[in-house]
Image (cartoon, rainbow, N blue to C red; front, top):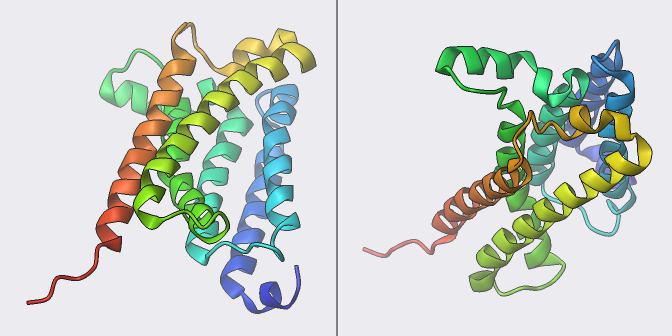
Length: 204
């Protein structure tokens, strides 16, 4: 990754933690074939971040947000989302009708990945700051919808018999729409906070 990476202790630490977590979650997963399917996107997006580092390096904040999201995903991939223990604990504690860990991760996609999108649009696409907040929310909505469609296609092509475990619908026919709406809600919150912090200071 070059000289910048060798000097960035924070990024080195993140990478070590993620690789360590990936190794831990690769040990005896709940369903090995589902784990492999879930990790396809980790390999693709992780590879993209590494391959584009020299051309476009995100801020440490963005890489930290990426790391948190990937950590949530790795845990979900290990257990399969519908069998994650934290989701069952939440279900029992709040008397919910299902394991909502997958919903937490979809909401986290919007909440955590919106800021890196914002950074990318400002620095690489040179979008006007006043438009950037709305465009990020639309981008997250588009990516989330695309992911839901891609997820279904991958399940049908690669391993149709794993469809229910991989998609994690838990019998909810509106699961994809709810997941997309939660990602959008997360992006709205993230951009509201970003807009608030970006406001010019008021002079007394």
